[in-house]
Length: 127
Image 1 (cartoon, helix red, strand yellow):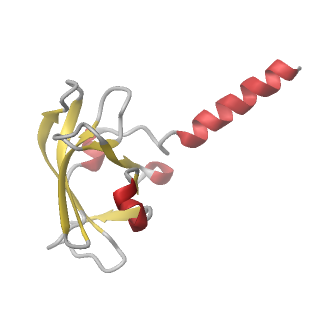
Image 2: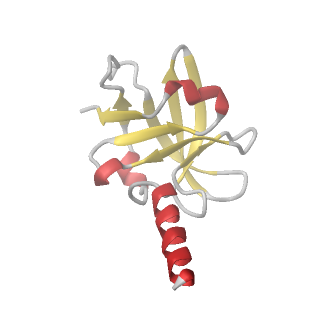
Image 3: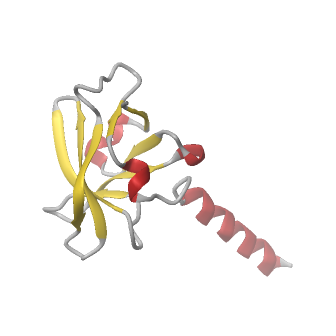
């Protein structure tokens, strides 16, 4: 009985830590704005071309703009780090990108301490 409880707790913790829905390249493609004052002319998040991380993972080259900063990185779309926005210079995961409640919005969650003050941001796709 004790073993079943431990397994159940482990599964529940793993599911709680996982992104809301598995991320696919076509779901994040395009230009995304912060509905809390962001515009499509100066989007918070936008994707560009297909790329690969330094580890050879399939990714999408993307840009995050907020608070006067512009960060260019790769959102991993295949592999163990799926959904992570990774710095191409340091291979460090800076953000987690996921689909809360299965979409249509995306959520950007800061992972690096430098950006945690931004908090979780749910974005709307620009037309």
